[in-house]
Image (tube, each protein chain N blue to C red):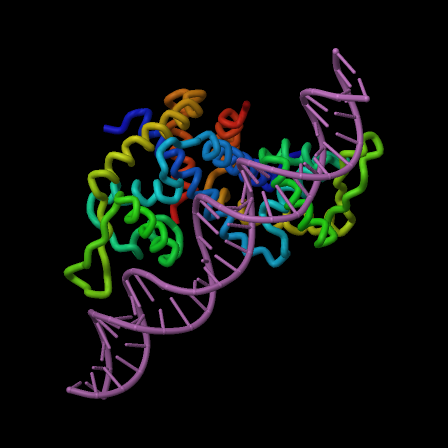
Length: 139
Length: 139
DNA sequence: AGATATACTGAGTTTAGCTCACTATGAGCT
DNA sequence: AGCTCATAGTGAGCTAAACTCAGTATATCT
C-alpha cells in the first residue's frame, strides 16, 4: 500500500538514476569535465566576466571549489583571469574564444544525449515534465 | 522559439539542480554515505541477500565499485558477507539488524527532505511525475 | 590607525565512481 | 579427464567534484 512517502522516495531514486546515467552516457570527446562545463555555461549565460566567488555562488559550490575549476579551465585556455579594476582583491574570469567554441560543442553533445532520452515522451508529456520539474526547482 | 532541443536542455539542467540540492540538503547525522545508503536500500528492497555483482547491476555501477561499498558497510557492521552455497566463487551480502535499523533512520530523513519538496505538487501531479520519470528510466 | 570583513588560494580530505590485472571457480567441448 | 573460456570477486591505483581549514592581500568601518 504505497503512500505519499513512498512516492517521494521513488521519485528521488528515479531522479538520481536518470542524472547518473545521463552523465555517464557522456563519454565526451572534448576534454572538459562536467563541473568545468557548468562553469563555462554559467559564464556564457552571464554574458560578462564574473568573479570566482560569484561563479561559486551561481554554481552552488563553495568559493574554494570554483578556484580549482577556474584553474583547470585557465590551464586549458578556455577562460582567462584578469584583475578586477574595481577591487584589487578580486579577479574576473572571462570566456576565451576557445572556451566559447568548446562550450558550443559540448552543449550540442549533451543536448543530443538528453534529446534521445526524452524522445520517449510525447511532446505534451515533455512539456508536462518540464512544468513539474520547474515547480520543484523554484526556490 | 524554443524547440524540442531546448526542452531537453532545460529538463537536463533542472534534473541536475534538483538532485544536487536534495543531496546537499542531507547533512545526515548518521555516518553512512549516499552510496552506502543506496546499497542498503537495494538490499532491503530485494528482501534477500544479493551478490555484489547483482548489487552493482541494480545500482548501475561496475562490480568493483560495489565491492568497496560492501567493504565499508561490512566494517560498519551494517551488512554481512557469507559464501554462496550454490557457487563457490560468489558471496552473498545480507543486511544485519543494525543495517536495517540505520536504513530506517536515513530513509526517514531523506523522505522528509524529498517529501517537503514534492509537497509542492498535488497528488495527481506527483503520480504524473512518477509515471514520466519511470518512462525515462526504463532501459 | 586599528579591527573586522571579504576575495582568493595552498594544503589536504572525502565521496563515488572508474580501469586494469589477478585469483578462484564454474561450464562447455572434445 | 583435460582444456579452454567465462564469471565472481578483489587489490592497486586513478579521477572528479566536492569539502574544510588556514593564510595573505585588500577593503571597509568606526
